[in-house]
Amino acid sequence: MGTDSSVGSGSLGDIIAPMVIWSTLETSCPICENRVRLREVGSGFAIGQDSDLLVRMEGKHIIQAEVHTCLQCHFSGFGADFLRTISPAARRRFREEVSPTLVDDAAALEAPAVIPRQPQKSRASSTRPEYKRTPLPDIQYYWAYRTAETLALPPVAQGLRLLRAYWCLRLDPTARLPVPRLKALRKLYLRGAIQKLRQGVRFEPDPNLTYLIGELCRRNENYLLAISYFRRFLEREGGAMYLKLAAKKLLDAARNRVPDALSMEQVLYDGSGEHKRRSAKPLPGQGEAPGRPAANPRSSGSGEGTRPGEDDLPGDE
Ligand SMILES: [Zn+2]
Image 1 (tube, helix red, strand yellow):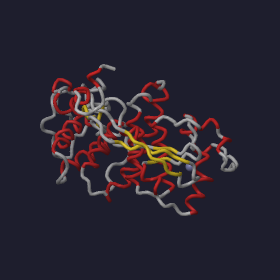
Image 2 (tube, protein in one colour; image 1 turned 180 degrees about the vertical axis):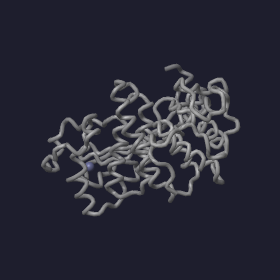
Image 3 (cartoon, protein in one colour; image 1 turned 180 degrees about the horizontal axis):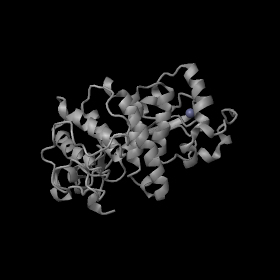
Image 4 (cartoon, protein in one colour; image 1 turned 90 degrees about the vertical axis):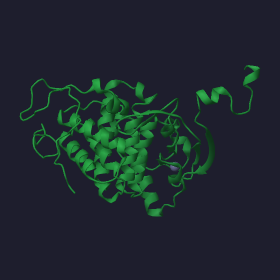
């Protein structure tokens, strides 16, 4: 350590590379009373945003610190979830029906129904040595979603946990998983997030949620749905201005059936990065040239460039 970088605040290093600050406090799991350490996040440093609203950060991302897991029963969630009062019936249901299915394994995630139910072991923690490590953050968020489902939290709360699981796939160390596994997880989380957010959006006052669903649908290649949600977002009042701009361009990407992951910077400022049409064949009724910026998306309902029957049916509101 250099002599001039001693304690104290306000050193240049803090300005150049602000840190995420953690503190821990201990509580007990509301299901099994096992001890759980909660980290609290002090601050982070944003360096950009992806078009699905993931804020990119230097170093370890705040969302990776905000999720907690009981290593004994796998109850997972935000700090506040550990402080909830949970009814004895819900506690029993979690312990007997959910906890045994929360296994840190890809196959189990894809087919949770076929996992044989294990006999409930006593509360002694020594019986599950393999569970002593905290799983990767995306798994923690997936378990947090399962936990939220058991606690009957609103669909949007469930969907946002799945969205965070999906975001975590972009962050180290999860991002270093083998590609096929990442692909399977992406599908699982993205589908689930879309389904839950669509279920809950009509009860949510935040207009930006409509944008988010549109963009998640585009990334999941549900183009008709994406178009429908982007339109709804553009037509309604409220919502962030930069998201309105982004929605116009992403609407065009959805019409051209481009599912690529994009950063907000690319969407808003990179005119040359306008997406190329994915398939070579032109779609009937399409007037615009490929690669042209979509400054003026048509407001009429015709000529979307997508054919019905390939997506889920749009529009339920
Ligand atoms: Zn527990």
